[in-house]
Each structure stands twice: as C-alpha cells, then as structure tokens.
Length: 246
Image 1: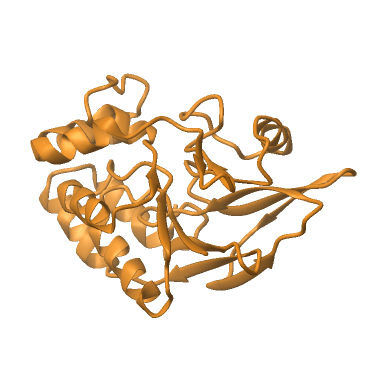
Image 2: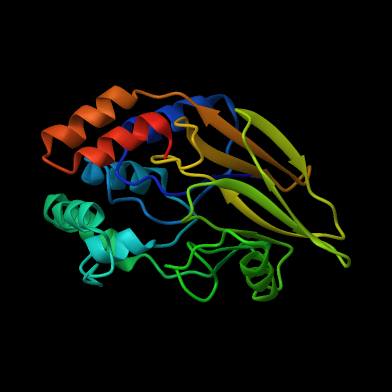
C-alpha cells in the first residue's frame, strides 16, 4: 500500500499542482493530509477544492485551518500570518470553509498502521524541533510510525532501545528503509512553504509493503505563487520567503 503524505500546503496552488503531477507516474493507493491546507498563500479556495477532489482517506486540521474556519481567533499569530488567514477566511466558499471546519484535530489513526498529527500529539500548535520534543511525541503513540507537520522541515526521528536519532532530509529524492525494532516520527516537509532553505515543494510516500519512506522535492512556479500573493495585497514577506525556502 502506498500512501501519499502531504502537509502544510498553505494555499499554494502552484506547488500542490506540481506535486500531484509529479506523482501521477506512481500508483498512489491513499492520500493523507497533515493539516494547514490554507494560510499564507493566495489560492486557498482552489487548494481546498483540489484536496477535496483527492478525497484523502484521512485529513486533519492545522492551526491555520482552525483560524480560517472561524474556530479560533488567531490572536497569537504574527501580523502577516493573521492578516493572511483572515483574508483567507473571507475568500473561502461556504462549502470549502465548512470542509476545513469539519476536519478533525489530530492525532488520527490511519488504517491501524500509523498515526498522524499536525504539530504534536498533545497540541496542534506545538513545534517539534528538538530531541526532547521528538522523544515526548513518540511516547504519546503506540504505533511504530507517526507523521507530523507544522515545522515545514523534512526530518526523520528514529528511536530504538538505546537512543533517538534525528536526520534532516535535504535531497530532492531520498529513500529511507524502516526497521521493525525502531519507532519513527516523520515530517514530510511542506508542500507550499518549505522552511529549510530549499524552496522546492516537499512531500513523502509511505510504502507499507516494502516498509520504506520516499521523500520528494520538486521545483514549481514560485513566481506565479508570489504574484498572486502580491496581487491579493498580502504581506510582501509571504511572497519573498517562497523563493528562499524560509
């Protein structure tokens, strides 16, 4: 079984379309979305429509989805993020706003095989960057594999009976074999707004038959996404950061 794992699309239609076009040559059995379909980018309604058409077997909400759906105020966002997400709320169709409002909060179990969360198992707004945070997240799940998003950085944390090791993924194509005696916390990176100084759209595929995770990075029409952000009157920073992956 092959699962396409997408996270943090953030209203970037150009990045999402490029990712989906790239995986057309792969037989994807099921689609998984780790949240933050919207926020920052200028094509929120179009992105939600594409995701709904994908019909993911499991999709959870992110912190930006929660605010865009009117479930939270976003008072703790910075100015650029809050302005963008409130603009997003106004631009979403009623149908698409209702869709993201109905997205469940993680953790969610997928086919009894692995768990997914947006930020951390205990808080969708929480960022997992450090060893202690990754270790705490792994203790929260009884599954061998947990996928998470929110940081916009591709990484694998592997835990055995001796130690926990983290490995950042930088290559455009990278394959990682999963071992039976280890537990994993995996971030596929961000489709629409990478933050690891690589501006290419990022995602992953979990192959449960071969027990491996494949990471992908691909170029997309960044200039087109930037132009839409500027035309929408959103903060210039949100356009500029796409070109530098930060």
